[in-house]
Length: 292
Length: 237
Image 1 (spheres, chains in turn green, yellow):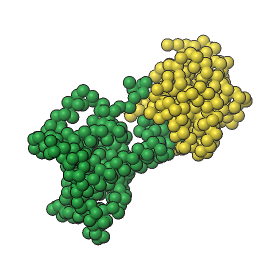
Image 2 (image 1 turned 45 degrees about the vertical axis):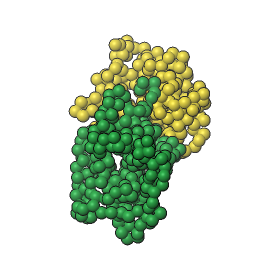
Image 3 (image 1 turned 90 degrees about the vertical axis):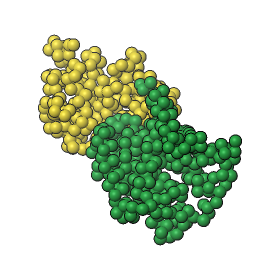
Image 4 (image 1 turned 180 degrees about the vertical axis):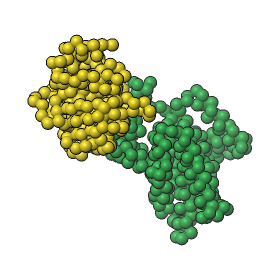
């Protein structure tokens, strides 16, 4: 029974990582409908930001890296939106190919700048050690990521529901033309949405440095799972993303416990495909008289 | 209300969806405080005309002068901030925002940002006060249309552009909407550009009209001319 209980905190921590990555996607994919295949490379940008800061300022720099990575990845996302994506709105397949191409360019740029081998970010001293949680043992670093994910969820919720910019963003995503004829500068909202979504990927990238090495393809390991979280949770649905991320994390953790890592991946995919057959719109869906 | 200098002058306006041309050199003028009704059968280009006037669909030729200023290349949101209020066809709202948020998000995008504008809009449609906390997508079609017009009024427009505001709305609310338009136009002197299919409603409200046929102005005149046989023929289905 105890080894089984050990999987609970592991599942939660996997879910927290997925959630951090998926949060950014709830903006660019969930709100704007842009399939941004370069999202994983914004995660990478965040990870390398943490690496660079730490190599200059030491282990404690990871905390400083969070806002810096947000700004760096956000700026990259903003540039991508301004220079390329905005010309492809309403053309999802073209956008997918475009952003995939950008992701390859960014990966190669990382190899050229930092080298192909992985590099290591050392967690700050206060994040080394373990805690017993829900009958299982969990590294402080994983606990920190869970807290970070929770803080980001609260922040994103407050932004979307309590701020003027968030309200404007929701309005644009629900009815772009109506927003324009209401006086909203929709282009500026798009820029901000992409900035925040990409910035959150940068934050996720910093978090990932606490649980593994950093390499040019760090983002690609997680990006598909993150898209699955957003789709299974319901496009643009924050609570759906939270539930789907935790569920996927748990499923992954227990499937790995009973089988192995490869088979666990297969099980996760099969379960999600089956779920989407039954509920193609995901866990939660935007409802209105006209949409139902 | 006597008609004054033009608030909107459209000259030689042309618009297209890709290669499909829809408008061919449309001219029209809405005087300050006037109500011009745009009429015509389905598919003749009435909505396209409004979209081209508001900038939702950039025109391919012609000019749009609003308040004496050429706004042909001005983005839609800036035209709105200058006083061009637009209520698109199909009782459009932000369905997942509450009624209050629908009005608030519009207010926050205006140049004036005066909270009194929301109160003024609610005075036009007091029924909306009951639903301020309800999501717009869950209102009835008629209530959504009232919200759509109230949303445009929050911008404190100099010109209110309405695309078939009574379409698909229950009769009791049609009467409320008609009364509201009449009050805004006749009592408050608001200039209105109205697309409407119902001749009777146009007869009651309009100062002047244009009839669009095949993307061109087939007939224009004052409200009195709406009884002409030629007009009835152009509007017959």
